Length: 335
Image (cartoon, rainbow, N blue to C red; front, side, top):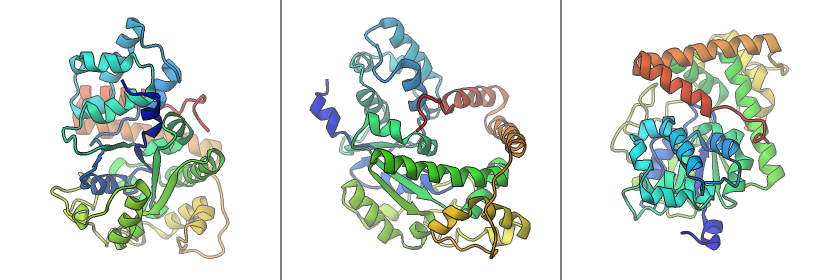
């Protein structure tokens, strides 16, 4: 079992950001590094499990071990990684659970359980929504490396609409709020953090990845930018290379009114990131409660529909149910 000193030295990599912002792209680039292993599926469940079982859980109890294994076996992560319940009942994981230490438990789930290349010693996770849980991640892993990738809100909103039919207005407001909250948490809790822009990554990949590797503490190699399979299953980034033209598509596919609306909802953060607005002399605005509630319901419906179309009725509904169950922003864990 890991010593306290070993636990304190753990420094996993967490890739966060809004969906459709390039989180998958940077995960695959990092996975091409000989020292880094990041699972192909998002965990999502870390805040859910910590809230349910406490920051210091009691897994010496056989009943609690059975409960957490049941929770994990139903997770979208185990579904996507093809991890069975019987695998979680192996003696190796039962011993890990008895450590009552989330740092050890999550390291096992993210790395030991699924990493077949033992030369890859740096582990982590790409779960975009953890942008809302940076305090918790840094509490579990004091030396965690938080890598936040940000995309132009107009292109990010367009991509989310194209894939999941998400509402442009609500998406834009969430883009702005997530970045503001993230930056406040980083400053307040002195979190180890690096922020990069998607546009910089696709236009100057070597320069940006050298910066990222220096931050993580690993060597950079040009081979990291060569892919054996397409990065994306959806959208316009289904290539074996980094597409430098995958930006400013909002100018073609969004109306002038839609662009203005997104810019109004994200104006202050856009300015801080040097994203140039199309519309001049506009003022910031917020969605009202009624607007936000209606758009949220529509987003939930469209995500549910997407999962059913992708996986079939039973698997789609089951997947969406457990995804939503783990995706709750528990008030006890929010910064």
